[in-house]
Length: 295
Image (cartoon, rainbow, N blue to C red; front, side, top):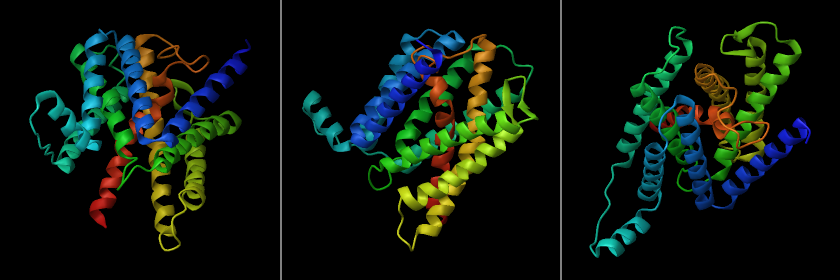
């Protein structure tokens, strides 16, 4: 099969599966990203040469447990009663808990950025491998699911975020290929250019405007604020998403491989497809928290 056709088909299947699961229900959304998480953990462990069973088991228990406790408290209480025949009241200072997880994730994100720009790091120590696994792969999946919830599950938020990421990636490539002359970080990603980077952000901002006005469809009284919010998210996606892409490229360069996996013909692995969103999600959640406490 032609490589371009193969890439188009696998990409289309990925997008259809992604959007269908997000729109169908919050349960299908949780399940799909739980599967994505396990595949991403497997790929990352292969990339940095870690044994896979224990990390995958931890990721499954962490993601499943946090999802049940945070989003299905009543079901979790009934499940505990069924198992132990005792009544349990689940008390969790959710805001504090989320902030602790966010703080850990952001600290590890800073470590990832240091890893990206530090040319002397050509080998990752074993403790660092587990730190990256936790904060670069596992914890961000929790924030991907968390930012989709305000008072209730809102699929438009996560779909809007993916649209921004796809827009940024697509136009960064188009602009960079058309007029790009100055390399962004050539030693890590030779094809990325400064012109493409700026072009991606500009078109992401345009997409953010269109999303807020025609997709989110905020009321006239809140439209201006919605446009401002999605414009800022677009800038976050353009900058932080590009860093996430470059960080994954650095991991692959250290490992000496082209792709993180082979599950998507023509595209590589799940980490190759989600490298931007998993790095962006904690920062978007942080932005929502700033909004929450500043209004």
